[in-house]
Image 1 (cartoon, rainbow, N blue to C red):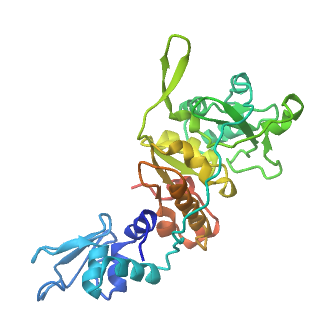
Image 2 (cartoon, rainbow, N blue to C red):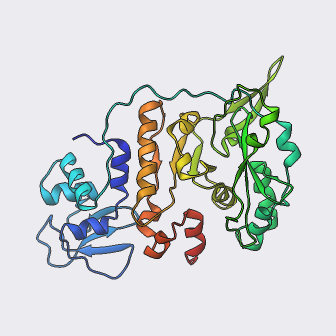
Length: 348
């Protein structure tokens, strides 16, 4: 069976220490990052085969044998690459979505009637409970939340809710989500999120049709190029995009991990292949929330595989299994996301 790039990547991110253990290697040493064992490539009397968990490789400093976890499985089991993949999938219970051709992809259009752009400008504020609680809860400093709020054009409602605007790369305003937070930066579940376009029904034409876009998509626009008659938004290809579930996480991480442009799909059920269509020229990695059964991870993986079949991405779509491998059972039970994990892990 031929496995696609996402499945291979998922296998490549397995811990080589766990793979070696499954193969029956008697690992020596107490370190989490590196262990050693007797080398099967020569008549080894003392453990000289070293495994690097961080690099995902093995190397013998006596005979020079080296490779990754795939080579380790292929050599140990005397099998082909596809057979090694199949063994890893079975041993580690990896979920694989069948590589079947999909029907014609969904039609991607902008909102037929985007909301007036000045509605965002009029709402801009860091006075929402969300912005205040991000600082009081210790996620960001006051200066950082001001910077992040400007980046994402965060608004504030009269009742103190934060407005997460959905603005595309052409700077069209699709809608906004009004959400309410408590002073500890957790969602106020007494207030149901409200969509701005639903509050404007009487002002919108009868044929108004909403097309959701990723929160933060407007950040793809890196420059404005002036022509004789108009200004044109210009995108830089190959930008590194990170997608998470919640807008809160994207906002916070934009100030902490600046290697990526952080975007949000707004919820597990909101993550659809068509949301990724504007990113075909960019390097995309997604960070699913975690749970006890891996349901969220597999749901995100399925969407990525569907998107890869529908749209001509220039770079492989990637999915992070950081939480699947490193979150504790208690954290998985709480269904944490990457920002929770980063702030709960003791800093070294």
